[in-house]
Structure formats: structure tokens, C-alpha cells
Amino acid sequence: PRVAESGVVTAEDARRLAAAGYELALVGSALMQGGDPRALAAAMLDAGRGARASLQGTHAGATTQVHAAALQPAAQGPAHRRDGKAST
Image 1 (cartoon, helix red, strand yellow):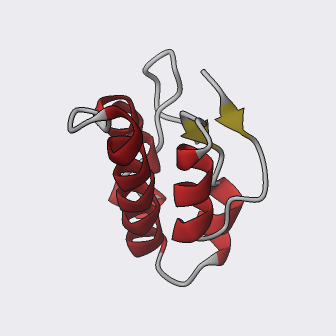
Image 2 (cartoon, helix red, strand yellow):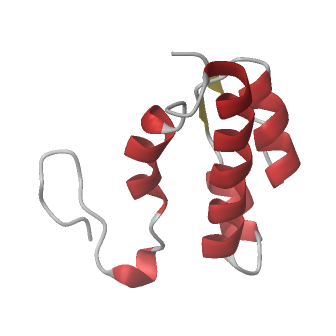
């Protein structure tokens, strides 16, 4: 998949990149620096899904939806590593 590795700060950035064909975007810095990471993540996902839907049809958000789980704020509980163990 095509991954945007920097410069994604706003929902409009996410929309623009999805419209350009990017499938994933690294947005950790934007979420950590913003005042409401949950709202920003939701806005980015909505914008990206909307752009992809315009390009590909109504089922376009499937890949983005799978990756949305990774955007849960740390306040929800301990982070887990790929091996399933809680990080410290």
C-alpha cells in the first residue's frame, strides 16, 4: 500500500492524500499535538473515507476501517505490542 509518512496534520490533508491514492497515513504527531486526538482522528478518517468513496465506490472505506483501531487514545488502557503483551 502507498503510505504517506509525513505532513498529515488536518482532515483536509487526509482527504487530499486519499484522493491522490494513498491508502495509509502516519498521523501520530498530529494526534499527540492536537487538543482532541479522538475528534481529529475521526475527522481524518471521515475525510479519507469520503475521498476514497468518491474514487472507488461505496465500499472504499474497508481498508481504512481496519486501521482505525490503531487510533484509540492511550487513555483507553495499556498499549499492546504486536506479540500481545502490554507495553510498559
